[in-house]
View 1 (cartoon, helix red, strand yellow):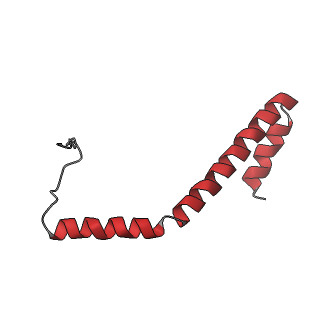
View 2 (cartoon, rainbow, N blue to C red):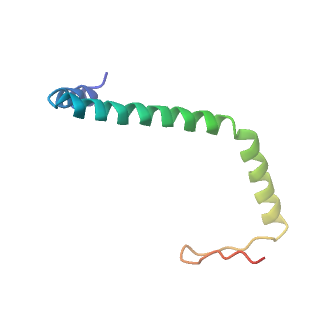
Length: 77
């Protein structure tokens, strides 16, 4: 355990039980969310590769244009 985590847990131990439980729930939810994100990202590599290939094809075919950071993208249908 890192020193910073030990320090944080020492401070949490000083809190009332209800606040400790609330912080514990936040930590557990964050860890679960991180695991879900890692799993989703790991399982999406094929799809991401296909999207990257399509983007490169679009660039090569001239179907894209460079935009500045302040320009809004408006899709025409």
